Image 1: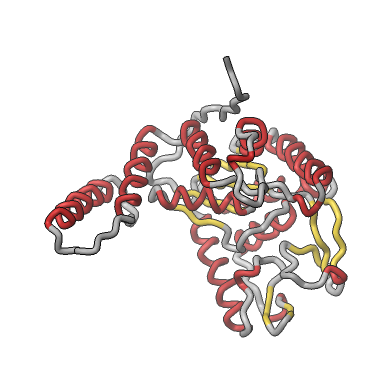
Image 2: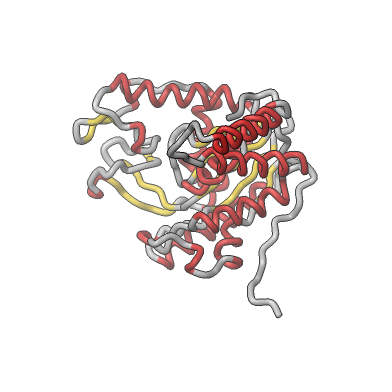
Length: 316
């Protein structure tokens, strides 16, 4: 008997190798996937603009990265004695304009350099809703807890979403390696503050637009992450206490499914061993002169050295 409907990711002909570079951008779920890739010691960078959710803002971020278009004082606003960019997450906000610009432009520069040598791009859309900052008539990526009266909320149109996705792909194809593979996902995190019906409408618009647009490109693919969590892991034991965000077990399950479809056998073994090493590195002792602990550390260092010999980039 079957007690669940399992969602599988179609196995990719192209595989992620241990020396490949992987760029991810979008919702917090994109960051969680990138964190696991980083823990597996692959070369990855995530969200140089911080967490952003809608296709329009992600497209604007990719365009800025592509053009190496740095931010200036005129691009910032002030609120609550902080200098902020409405294109970025609140993690970039500071009390000093030079510090905010330094954080923003440093991330932009690093992202631009990384993209030029990137083999894989993972884009995770979270919502079709967007906010317009009324004083500047500007569509924003984050409201920075500025009072609601300064914003107008609306759904992006189908044309706006498809054009954003299309332009994102073109910019990535131009700046990344010639055979770059772009993987699109829709975040399984439900935006319940929008309303349950509105959230489903928002997600459906994203899924429809992604499928319609990527059909025009051979190097673009859809990862059914949303479907895996909604249909496969459809039990609240796979969610955090807020009942909205997938928990650690769910994230690891999705990552495992992703790996089965997209990692080479060498990459699977490499990541698996690195996960074990990271777990061992967490081990603490009250007596670092204990012979058994010294032996444990020596064996662990040998394993790390063996892993280092497999790649050219720096690990651990």
